Length: 128
Image 1 (cartoon, one colour):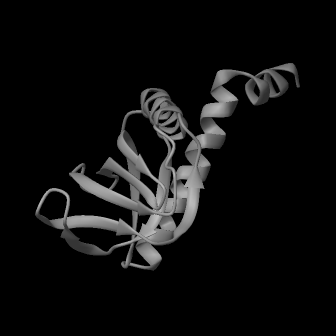
Image 2 (cartoon, helix red, strand yellow; image 1 turned 30 degrees about the vertical axis):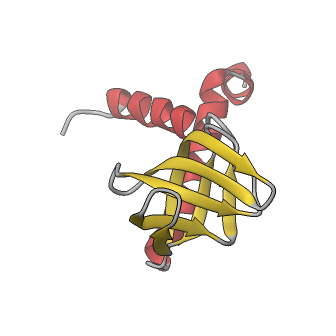
Image 3 (cartoon, one colour; image 1 turned 180 degrees about the horizontal axis):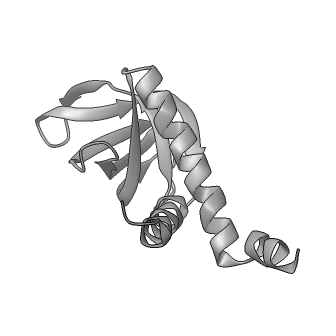
């Protein structure tokens, strides 16, 4: 019993919960191909009507300039958003991801915690 309690309140327990949350959001992407999960790696400009950021796509690892309309994205957070590439006036980039609505939000550190958990689970899995 103490092992179970320790696992819940330890870093391992938090990492496992983060992994469950991340995989649940990833499942929503699979169910709806118009949605994409992105991780904010840089917020480089904030304005009254939104923020410019660089995100990494969870499914491809591709970096992309992003405009969060009317929002202030949190560095290190993950957002489930609708795919919507538009022309970027500020950098003349035809492939800026415009975020008009967030469908899910994962706090900073969730992706990293889930990665740690998944790595531990792979190491402890029996060899096939």
